[in-house]
Length: 358
Image 1 (tube, helix red, strand yellow):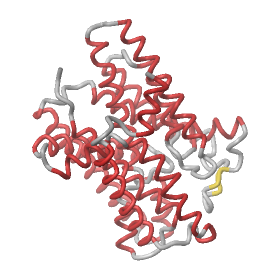
Image 2 (cartoon, helix red, strand yellow):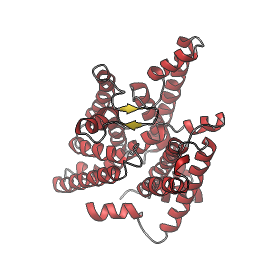
Image 3 (cartoon, helix red, strand yellow):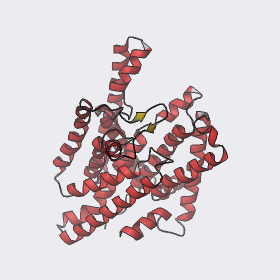
């Protein structure tokens, strides 16, 4: 049996911390010092994309053995397990959607359910399907208004609890719509099917993805600067089309998000392998193993505490408060993970999920 790749869990921990920073900024407030706002914006869309790509990697690691050995009985069991986990995550995400409308878990569940149909697909089919989803999204935008249902000033979705509104939000214009976000999981699944113990391959992925990411960022910035000719209003409009923002998830964002996800994951694999016995790496490794618990906790506990203290001020805190609180909360998560893993093999919510689905 090959050794567990701890870099995957390290990357998962960093992705979770990135999402905590982004989500606390959205909920508590994002006005304040420009350099703090710039720091926080670095994680916009990228942390969540990395989280989903990592889920695809996880699915591959679950299924690789059965597929390689053509063990249909084992594959059937794994498929059932994935379906039950998908349903579990969907229910968990929907259960608190009223207090956290930007939840990713219920979308996550749908991505996983779709992936069941593609588990035994050839690698080129996985990539082709991912690219098709990415290209399909802007085509859909020519038929349907992306802003339908949204009040972007308050981030409220007007008809979310109607069938039409729910399906529109889920598949087209929610925070992480199935089209095209399932592509992230497909890319992750492709990556997880490769030999992740091959240092040469991992380094190659790191450099290629890093170059793609930097190139897209530079091209986006230069295009907007050149075409806007210094006009701020024009620059704002162009950013919606040529920028790398996650909403709407146009192809430039999807490829940019995929590239940074691969760069982060491959870098974590390289660094964690090199410094396997480092205490920081060990702590992040354990934190990544409890990522689901911490994602839910940052909503229920992290947001809940501040809301209970002063509900009227929600959304009006400074970005400095949002970021510092996110970092403190993340540090507490790391400490909790290190202590918890001394006594338990999996996190609280991870244990519940496995108990129900395995």
